[in-house]
Length: 153
Image (cartoon, rainbow, N blue to C red; front, side, top):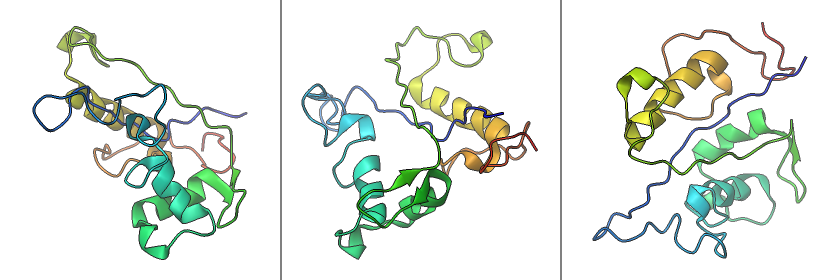
């Protein structure tokens, strides 16, 4: 039986770091793929930096260690012009409001930064080492998975 895995949790803020302007991560999102909520195809963004590791033709200085660690869980083959995913990957996003409750409704409205760490902690408990986030992991797992056949261990 195949179980869906949560492999990464991240956020992109609405406001940028300077003068409260709209964040570059979401500005002109309908036309600009280079930033796309931190998943863009530019360097310093997930798809761009992962591409620098897995595709031929990139200068080695752009191959960051973080994304080298992503290759084995995500890809059957890489360092090629046609990497092959281990399984189907889906992208899910939600626009977050100040009045939205997070993972625990008892906390009431949850700030996005706090919610990100709540979700990383929950996902790392449920999915263990399959979660690619480096920070915020729980110190225990609730239900470990074998990453390669996705059956509960």
